[in-house]
Image (cartoon, rainbow, N blue to C red):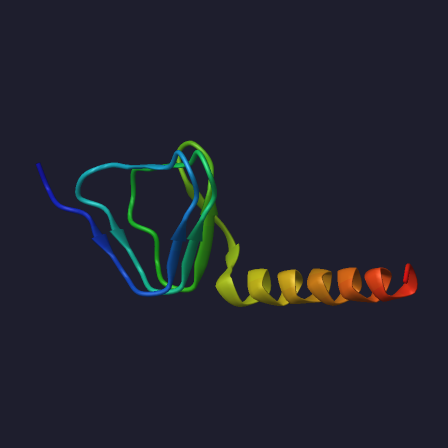
Length: 79
């Protein structure tokens, strides 16, 4: 059975299964419950069964930052 290599700055969601002989690059987000049967390149977001790349890490981070900023604005309006 082959090993699994996981890069730096990787988030693996709860319940994810990573099969043997898979490499996960740096700066990767894997959605909860995904089954990773193939290698995932660096700077990617992957989800599903089997896990597929659905976007870039940079786009994901930018989207989440925007959501956090909107949330903070809404919270300040309710005070």
